[in-house]
Image 1: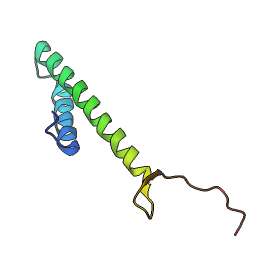
Image 2: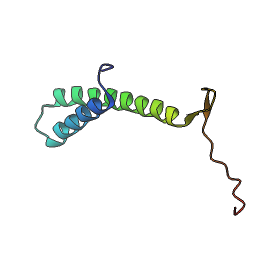
Image 3: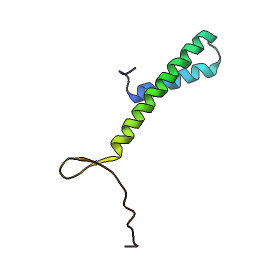
Length: 77
C-alpha cells in the first residue's frame, strides 16, 4: 500500500466501496474488502495530515520552515 499514491489509494477505496454497495459479493469477501478499505482510509488520512502540515509551513527568506500564521492585526488599514 505504501507504493500507492494518494490518488491511487483513493481510487482503490472508491472501487471497494462500490463493490460493497453492490451487495453482490459474499460475506467473507466483503469482510476482507472492508478490512482493506479501513487500511486505505488510514493511509489516506495519514497522507492528508502530512500534506496539511506541509501546507501550514512557509519558507522564510533564509530557507527555514516556519509555521504559517495569519495576522489579525487588521486595524482597518
